[in-house]
Length: 335
Image (tube, rainbow, N blue to C red):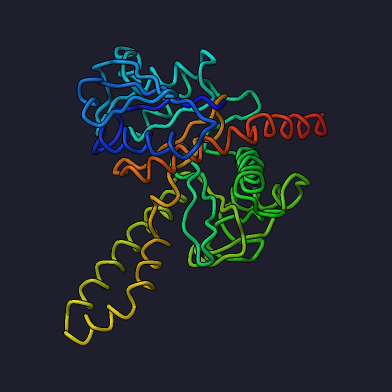
């Protein structure tokens, strides 16, 4: 049985979508047990009895606009997010899912669950939309800005294992986001990273790609530093919202457009779904001694259900063990 800890109070609209998404996952997957941490009084209107659901009551939780997560960790260890992470540290769960503030989740991961010995940095790795509908892993999307090329190689190895074992991509390709496709492009850091990725036998290196190729590239893992990849991710999100707003405006602009939209209803629905982050669920915080999934702050029940599904699938294939084994072999070869 896969055991998952859920932060019931994290997110813009918690606890309703968190509790409802949790119950959806329990109904869908018979091989999971969930412990949800949060204010039982506030969660009660949405909770239902379930043999594989345990509720741990705490009135403490983290606000989404939290400015000082380190202080919160030191003074507020009863917060629902930190209690859920402690559950993983104590071996009572294999994964934690939260829609709470990202930096608090990163801080809690470092202080509670701890970083894998083989990983020297942690990365935020969401699955972003793609033209072919399969999705692409983008990292690091904001956990760090200061990297060494070796850190990006570790991320590439981890993400390649997730792409192959969880997303079922055969021989997943890794691309480096850069200002041009040529080998000599970019900062000195990019050039060094390119050489390291190209020489690695643990990944399938595709080469450089430009940001304009992010949604259409053949590569399955898109790699960059936390500053660049975060801008790429937010640009995609903003563009999707902007295109949606323009479509609505143009459809409402005339009677003929509204009639045309009726004929295109199915196509427009598929278009919306292809850019909808709730279809994916959340982002993996890559590098901790346990699966940590960050659901969107504005998640609704379906999106949170998918975040739990992600956690379940990563535990099922034992991602952390596979990464540790691969990175240990890499270090042994260097020695």
